[in-house]
Length: 335
Image (cartoon, rainbow, N blue to C red; front, top):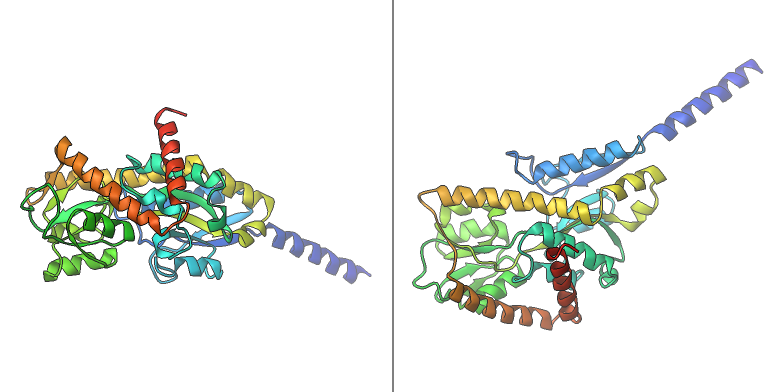
């Protein structure tokens, strides 16, 4: 009898120990370890620690930096197949799945990533995007800083990009280049350096966030600081995995998700973008120009036409864009 009681006691202890073990969620941000204090990669570590600490021991976020476990091309599949449980993906890498959500990537919308990300979360909360998020649950949403034109050398005129061969990594930036008179070359962002270096392209459309990552400053020296479109993305998990978590784990994720958290993430991208822009401006080998108001207005008009073409293949995009812009106006007004 005594041995039976001891055995039963051990089982109870083991059961309590097992119950106390936190659930571990693997999080792949799809980026390398941070290289400086403003690097957005710092945010993922801080966010993961925050969620873990807020979970009261119910959850551990295991950050997997680098690209061995997941990359931009397979991130969505890695999460939905449960290889990892949380990932960061840009919507343009999940072809056809998020046609309306990508209105946050259009030019002539948000002035910064913090406001754009806040407005994008409100658009998601409106229910307009429910069909696109049927399988996954966004924890944070981001509208990245606007991309600009980076050229090997100064163009003949700032009126347009006629004669320039431009790498447009996304559908929108490709259309933007086209409507500005350039020949568009469809290549991913990380292929822009090689194309320009080999002389098969004259420039690209990217944000200053990747100025060093993709070595843009080594092959381009003239930068037109005019919004040309961007990309939008999310830190996300599947609804199935979220629904299976204990209450304290869900509460910790909820506390560090949503509109305010998305705006904070956007602010990290804004700071990184601004830091790299200032470095380029202070570099004697680089020229960063802002278009005169009249010419900027002409570019804006052309880019509006590019937006219209982009939306033709996306039923409902005009309504989604109007709602997104209304949210941006509300945010600018402090609402």
